[in-house]
Length: 134
Image 1 (cartoon, rainbow, N blue to C red):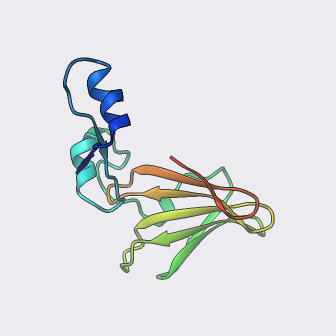
Image 2 (image 1 turned 90 degrees about the horizontal axis):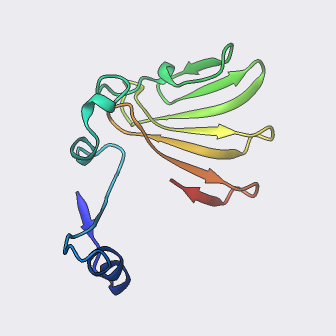
């Protein structure tokens, strides 16, 4: 669940500078793992800990969400605004949503875990290269 820092910089920043001898760790979050239940209390989950179904994605008013057994789409009138990716089963549980710009290129990706929680977002630059992951 945790990866402990072992480098000198991390040791100096976490242990020595505070003088308390407490180890510091970084959580290893992977969307559909059970480790996130140990890190984030279940009362924070939006859907009471249930996986997010494809039509539960937050979108602006009057945008349409549609889906098949393969994936889903988010549309604003005739413009494709997003692509929904499922967790691999036939139950249409969301694992990722790509949000698209006017040209149809992915500008950011929202990552959901098996409790319907948006745990990460990846942002892409105009060339489609990964710019930031939070």
